[in-house]
Amino acid sequence: MDVKVGRVVRRIIPRKRFKVKTGKTEKHINRIISSGSGVFMGLIDPDKQSPKEALKLAKSMDEGGADVIMLGGSIGAQGVALDEMARMIRESVDVPLHLFPGNVSNITKYADSMYFMSLLNSKNPYWISGAQSLGAPIVNKYKIEAIPTAYLVFEPGQTVGYVGEAQLLPRDKPDLSAAYSMAAQYMGMRFVILESGSGAPSPVPTPIVSAIRRMCSINIVIAGGVKTPEQARELIKAGANCIHIGTKIEDDSNPLEKVKRFAKAIHTKVDAK
Image (cartoon, rainbow, N blue to C red; front, side, top):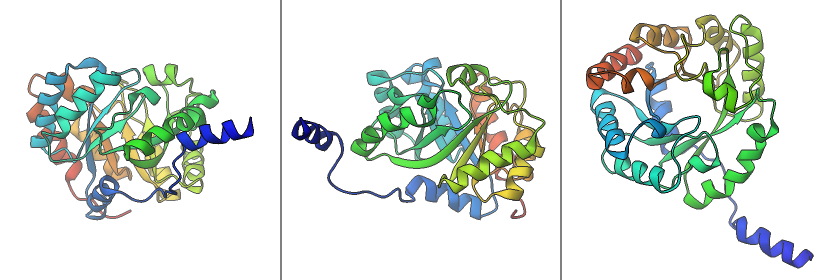
């Protein structure tokens, strides 16, 4: 019995040791941050687009000034459909293709990198460490650059709050958000995503961003609720490093022009914090 168990483990876990190194995508992001600029991360939801539509949108993001293109959603495409979409985009754009996975099934070998996320304020251990344990061997097998990331979901939460069974963080408690972010940094995570949920009325408030920036050196990513370039700019000034923009581009009649406006706002240099 012991021998059989050992054989199973050896099939799943590679013999070669590995380290979570800073890879090309993370270095790319850090170079932009070091220059004093924010990072524009364009998000495409695979569940809302056909592969051809996603490719057209990705090209507009690349041309308009996005620094990273992401695939991800709370439900999202998987398997062959996700592989085909990711392959087409990766072959056609110059910026990194990054995964923002909703679950283990949202991993594709055609991605350059991914957030390796733990939803720290979930009430279900599956979203804190269970999905990560199932996904780790797949990420290793495909040699996808994994970026250790904390995921925090704020009110109103939207779909991701429901799916991730999150104990939603309040928008008026900056100290609580800072405490979670400090914990993430102590646990070795290099990014923290402050998520309001796709389609949320507004992003995480700037006082929360400023409180985290005062206490932590971790890279701060804003997701959900950013509807205007002015909002994105204010979040960067408050201390955010990266801004996810998805719905407002996908739903626009002229996505290229919308991308350019967001790029200009996010890339405007700010004093180092």
